Length: 216
Image (cartoon, rainbow, N blue to C red; front, side):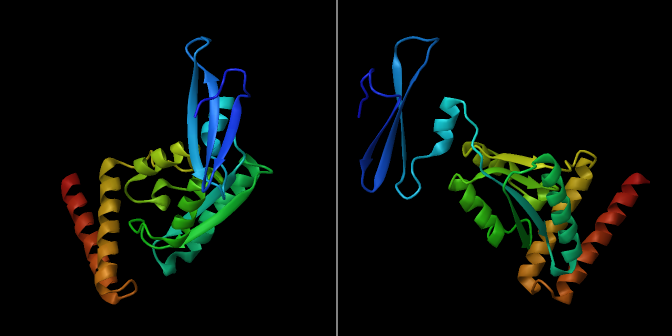
């Protein structure tokens, strides 16, 4: 499908069940050569907005998602503190903008968290402008770089209020190892079982002793 040079910059041809949006833009230092970009999207949602906005130099006003997470039900007070910190930050730094607070109770290794799935669905539906967390590991324990790439592809900014700049590599590895042990112990013995708690506590002691020996 081609657009003649004298036609409007944007032309839309409906072809059930899809919409093809044709956007003509000039490149190569103002040359007369026009390139045609086609974007396909479900009719229910219209054509993707982010590529169009990038070409037009516009910024989309989407929802700012404030996301908090804790690993267990005994950490609900920590979850409340996260939510409070996120909402207070939004009041000051994103005054007047639409926000949505989402929370999960579950392992950072669990990719099936209900609110995380809702967050990703809204990102893929071009409804989100920014995702905000207190610490990066609240969103995920591993694979944060993949999420950054995904968000970037949909024009979404990831904001971490408290970057882990003060943590040493050893501290980060220790926390990740404990998270893995807790996750698999929970699957093996049950999330609230005494065996799981005992195993995690034992792992903490072993790691603490190993760190003490290294310092000596």
